[in-house]
Amino acid sequence: MAEELPVVVIGAGPQGLAAAAHLVERGQEVLVVEKGRSAGSAVGEWGHVRLFSDWGELIDRAAARLLTPTGWEPPAPGWPTGAEWISGYLAPLAAALGDRVRYGSRVIGVSRRGRDRLVDAGRAEQPFTVHIEALDGTEHRVEASAVIDASGTWSSPNPAGADGLPALGERAASELLDYRIPDHHRSSDYEGRHSVVLGSGHSAVTAAITLGRIARRDPSTRVTWVLRRESVGSTFGGGAADELPARGRLGLAAKELVDSGRVELVTGFRTERILRDGGRVVLTSEDGRALAPADRVVVLTGFRPDLSFLSELRLELDAALQAPARIAAEVDPNIHSCGSVAATGAADLAQPEPGFYLVGAKSYGRAPTFLALTGYEQVRSVAAALSGDHEAAARVEVQLPDTGVCGGAGPFDSSATATTATCCALPGPQVVQIGLAPGQA
Image (tube, rainbow, N blue to C red; front, side, top):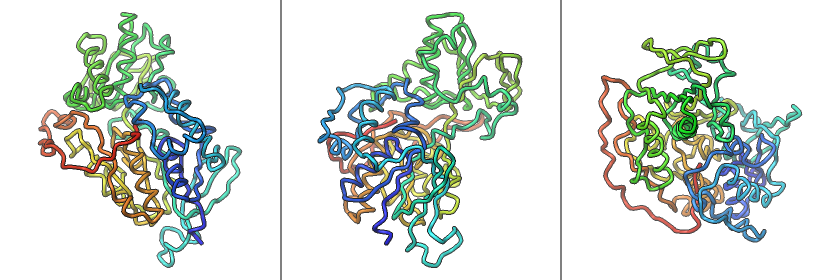
């Protein structure tokens, strides 16, 4: 009976819609449930940001095959903004999938019919039950033969506090804190003011560049960029060695703004307290240092997966990353010092709960730097596995671009030593099939 039920995909973002396209191509019934009112609703929240992957890396191949009969044509080569990614690809793809995509549907629980997490007997033979809450608060349940969680991590940003918990006073000062990349179209919010950026990933780099360029136009604007690590390490990326040129240029642009003094870089600062001082805030670190009062604080310290609605499933997740255990060593920034990351497929993502897969950014847990290219390969493999095509599921059909970074993020403490870059040798050969390349976020 379970085989007659649809595969439920959670999230109508890039990976969720691509998963649906692959499943449809393989003759599978599929239902995509999306809590937003439209496709790519999370992408829409950073629609002003330009991606560092070009169009060829942002379009899934099965999705392109589904779209072509509708008259859709791939956009001209270039690097779209999030909004352009939606209008040029995600929205048409969702339209092509039609009523297979259900909007305004927030998943609040996933389990097995008649079996909670404790019960062994007949567990794998029972269909999944996906509990959904609509926008009006009504609840209903959908049964599924399998579940692919592509809900991402965008809705769960990390706090400013260096210990993973909100800094003291962070909640009280929340109206002066942003957890999203500043919009350059709203430069008046930052001109002539002091802004602090917390974080070292690509989002923080992009924020520092956005604010630094405002400071270049208006010298009365002050920007402080705060890193928790004692050294800059790989913050500026691989530059010309990055196999995604736009990503390499991003780091070089940030470095130029720091070198010119438009952006002040502070290292080894681990936020403990955020004190409201009228219309400004003062950040204090664990070692007692305090930054100059800031008008705005942009908190871009990464994201974490929301696992709350998966509590009744049996999952095997890495204790640190909250990612599938089999891929943790490959993506863990504590131990992975190279810029190269291998593609992951169904076998890597499989869980003790048969038929359930975490894909997309959520599959990386708390690890940074997820590419849409990674997710498209994941969902291709998972769709093949769910369709019984284990040969296709086991194949690797993409080679991920190297960041050009070797040696890791740098020592965390002043007393620490850099990780030995034992993985910086050239990777072994992989099977690569060239076609319309999948992409990144």
